[in-house]
Length: 264
Ligand SMILES: C[S@@+](CC[C@H](N)C(=O)[O-])C[C@H]1O[C@@H](n2cnc3c(N)ncnc32)[C@H](O)[C@@H]1O
Image (cartoon, rainbow, N blue to C red; front, side):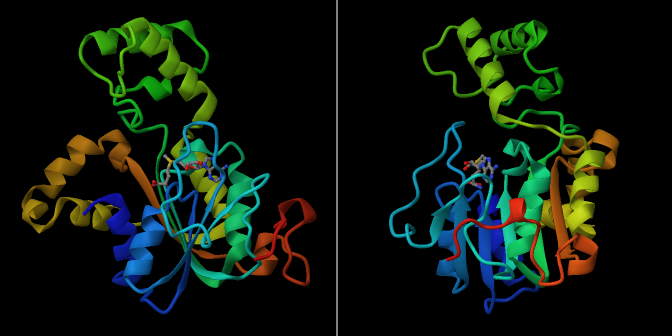
């Protein structure tokens, strides 16, 4: 089971069922939206089409995958039972805005599923080089470390670039398009909008590896997710806070700068 399939499994078998309305936030080409639709779930997507390499939306999904503008989700308040985001939050600059928007479009009691790496993971997932994301942005040592690791055979998306050019370009991309946060920063941000935050990494790992790996899962977990015993991906399953707790006004609206620009 890959991450896309896991999202669908979470939605359907994980307790939400098919009689729900779902949003994939930062859906990319819309693979999860398509799989959810194939499973009989009402599914929509929204995309910022950021400059870091946004994918073209799959054929047939244009009417359900809507573009975002200025961080706003183009759907009305209280629309979705489940909002998924897969590998998105490590690209989002303003996480409070993203989470407040997700919270706005979730129905009361709705659930958000977030899968993304924090700064504590060992391997930078976009290029495969260990620890590269932990270097300060814009620093020369980061480039030379990437070059050294590249020379040792690490890294993907090598194309026909020289090793140095690849290291420069990739570090430039990381500087510009990723925001790796500490676990505590992430937990604090999610805690403002969603409670309780429930970790479901064990379930994710079991589904990703399959039953045959069950006897070894403890061993594998330690290898893959060694940092402080926490997993490499954050899977947050949190229910929406009620309006009083979340700072909405008496009509249930977010402050003006957090409102949707287009109602669909
Ligand atoms: C690594 S891709 C993941 C795409 C998709 N979720 C998937 O799993 O295939 C990261 C996605 O996050 C989107 N993104 C980046 N910044 C965003 C933001 N502030 N709000 C919403 N989406 C954003 C990008 O446009 C991109 O499609």
